[in-house]
Length: 530
Image: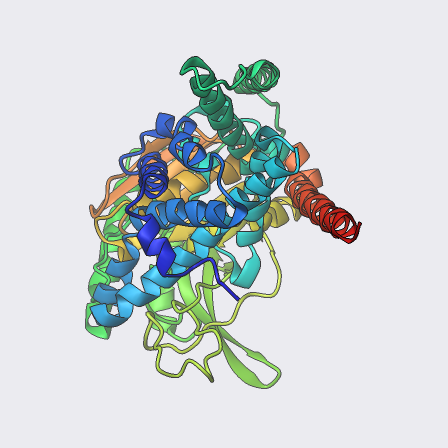
């Protein structure tokens, strides 16, 4: 069997098709933060589409793979910072692991390109097959093998507020569809103008214009609508401690850590005339809050002193089936110093918080050392602070839209993301993480507040507008007033139904192509016999 990923792929990198595929990958990467040249996403696929001309499905697969490898190699370069600086892996291990993930993600680009080319050969226009297949494979990679819903094309548009409002209808996939369709229409228009004998894509242009006008009309309308919510506004303070990762879990540094958060918290509250909720980042309390009564009382006293609810990240443990289970959690303390509740992280980071197939992959250590493998929480349970309920999402689980949806469906009216992005260093990753987070607010029409250890700490309203944000690696705090969300959007009702529809349509295209090829072979066989 001749596998498409072979030496010929390397050879392809030096021909015309290969360079065009690489150009698309570079343009895709540049559309994400940083530098965040989001307009490039609307033309990024054109070189790849030129490369796909008159190609076989096998070559189309390789072209898509080349574009994907280029894009993700540039977007995810920061993984090597995580692996080497904090995971203590040698470069000889880090680079192969990084490349394996890059190739895995690139396979979905490859599959989309292959399906689109197969459809064209069967008489189905790429203006239909490529956007649908792109969404289908984006969706599949968001959950397959734990999932990695990072850097989807739609995420690049997070600052274009009128455009991204349709996320409350179809999630980020609606924006991705528009981007892919626009690339195809522009490509066909350029080919027609260049005298290549390609007809002008009149129908496709009309469809694209209708979709864009409808999207922008809906977006501007949503931005100008002020929803009436019975809950009163909340005054919040977000604290960014900027605790270095290499000393974060050191017992000798514990006192300094707590002192830093106490000082920044008092500074944030000073002169504000009352704060309803203070949020510290993930693992801001670098010990088991349950097991350290003296240190815990210190935190409780702070909540009493400031007469406010205090939310903070801390590891936790509980007995499950007679065994001690470790959890990455957030605790909420009331103004009276009582523990109101605990929320546990539901979606863990592979190799960061646990090792998949740990009995087999014994040579790989976790990046987080010293506590043991974490276990996921069992339910999406909002924390009730009295005036409203909070949906807590820890670290990178904010990239999974279904989790935010579960919290809001369970009654949360404010989403709280606590994270420790110190792992990423001075890279693009914290900004990419922030960009993805904005979509959770729009999809659920629920404001999102984000407290990060080293940045980016931010307040995001229910329209995805970033009201305030900090820089990286600075001690800082942000205060503001937010209106709890309405808990009302089409996305909350139908979830990822549009993405599932894309999967079904993609399967339908593959089935149609397969049947047509079988019929063609049978016809050729009958002709030969005659």
